[in-house]
Length: 89
Image (cartoon, rainbow, N blue to C red):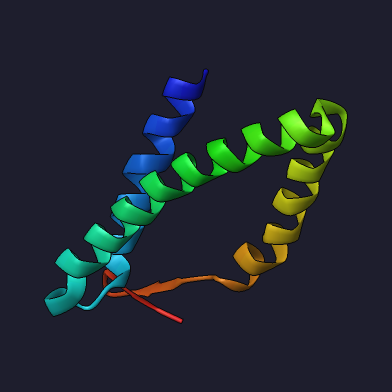
């Protein structure tokens, strides 16, 4: 399941980044998106493992849910309207 969903996220995320960035910055934007995606997975895994070891899974898993829930308003505010194939905020 993770492979299927990650493929969808990676492809659509890269597409959104490349369409949203100005043409002269699209390479840098895609590089930053890819680097931060990889770093987030690594840091998240290490931090989650450390927390699970120190305080247990019974706290770590709900805490991850809270962090995910707190990210929803940020994502909700970040909306793009497409005009003529380019994104504007």
